[in-house]
Image (cartoon, rainbow, N blue to C red):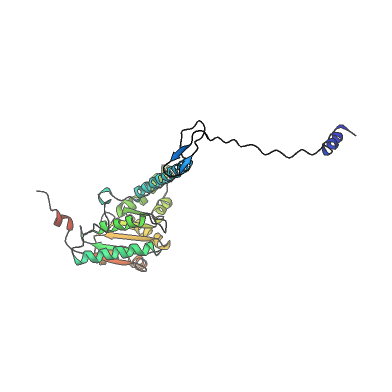
Length: 278
């Protein structure tokens, strides 16, 4: 028998090892100096450690972990709201502080609230708000954003974004410059950034976007969002007839498929409430 075979035979014939003994776990509590917790009663502190009720220590650790998660959540929420692009001037806007002194204002507020509830319920659609300057259209559109992005217990908050029509058009029409400069961007990616949000508010439609390529860019965004079943709020100082002319019959028909129109034609509330400084 060669050496390896003999070693294998000796290994198989070896006596069985005895079962390992149970390890002794030392009691590290100091029995000679009992302490008292006002909440959990008597306890024995750990040797060499500051006296602390073990149950209180667990609660403290759990609270610290909860606070950590809350801080992370708040940081994410802050980043989300920053990404929403709401102008600082309108960051305070909400349904509760919207003026409703005129019948038309009450109608507009009711329509904006109803639209928000529709989106929160999982439906999609377009809301077109047209009317004179200073009638609170931007206020209501930002209110929709803030309510949709608010934390809810039953569902994840939605992501909504605000942008002017001119900013969107310029961003899309100049994408080729960034692509040529190899900045990691192109027209397709730029367009997708305006399709991704659950809700997109496009303000000042028809104001600084009258060039053909700008209007075409806005049409592409609205069409892409409609095809992706994303909700869009369109805000303009144009009349309903002028908006229809600007959108064109085909796009107007698509927006009206599951959309609503709110007309806000009353006196400018900015100058009516404050007036020009003398």
